[in-house]
Amino acid sequence: MTVPPKPEPTGLFERATRRLPVERTPVWFMRQAGRTLPEYRKLRERWTLLQMCADPALCAEVTLQPMRRMPLDAAVMFGDIMLPLVGIGVDLDIVEGVGPVIAHPIRDLAGVAALRDLEPEADVPAAIEAVRLVRAALEPERAVLGFAGAPFTLAAYLVEGRPTRDFAKTKALMLGAPDVWAALMERLVAIVVRFMRANAQAGVSALQLFDSWVGALSVTDYDRHVRPWTQQVFAGLRDLDVPLVHFGTGCSHLLDQMKDDGAHIIGLDWRTPLDEAWARVGHDKGVQGNLDPAALSAPADVVAAAAREVLDRAAGRPGHVFNLGHGMLPHTPLANIERVVEVVQTYRPSTVVTDAMAPAA
Image (tube, rainbow, N blue to C red; front, side, top):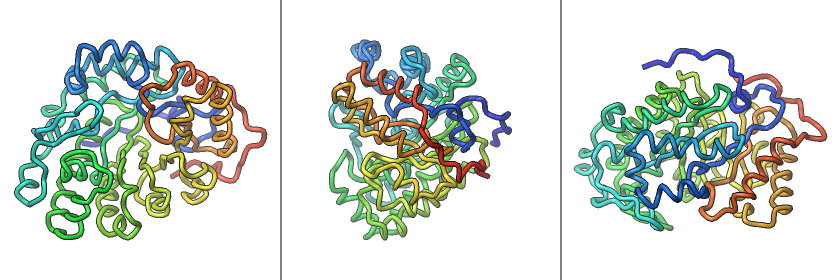
């Protein structure tokens, strides 16, 4: 399915992601839907995460909660990167304090063969309907972001069976059973592309690919065993008239590869100063980030100074979206989040860099 072209964007987020001039930097936060809000915690007293994800009205409600509290420029859909896998019947649970736990890890071709194709409207109807509800509820100038897990990160969960620090089983399969690895990645590419295209058809303004664990790879392993599949994901979305964002953590050493994988915007974690990372990515692309989420627990004046430093490093260059360098931490003081939003919205650079004013193709 092909999404028809959209009219010229009017919202700050969409203009910034297309590297068009904006009157101020747009701001949103990864994991802003849930986590820190008391109204979300009240809902979690009654429902698990997966139960909430199965109810489009609840998904929409949680997505909209931070938008009611703060003048954020984009709503990120409430959900989880494992939802497409749940939809196709993978036996998994998202365990509080642990993360996704897979009942039957996949480590051979028979396991890969059990992963059927995704039919979004049938397999993840709540996620798709929630997008429609959120888009209808929000002002047109406020963007709606859909997201999915990247093939490598999904594969790591499927192979390991649960979160890990060393990814030993994943790397062993990747290096020692290339036929199994290729089959698994090919299947996951198809699932991710179908899920993200369905989000676009339902009305999201942009799509973000989360490769949460790709930083565990060397440049060589990323080049040989992951990058071709990541490129296939973006190639499968390229005809959509929506900005594509690629975000990974701990992957400063991979920026020279990621910048050419097909995304319009590169999400930056907090480990590399924004201006240095942007220079490596190239100013013909936009960037998103990159305040350390832990900084939000510091005193309010320290938080404000840290936010201004990120903005100073962006220097008013077209294409910056303010965000954290990873997801919001659960016990972040709400007042500090609101303070950062205020800082971003009132910030004006002392000098504006103008060497990349032309919009991206």
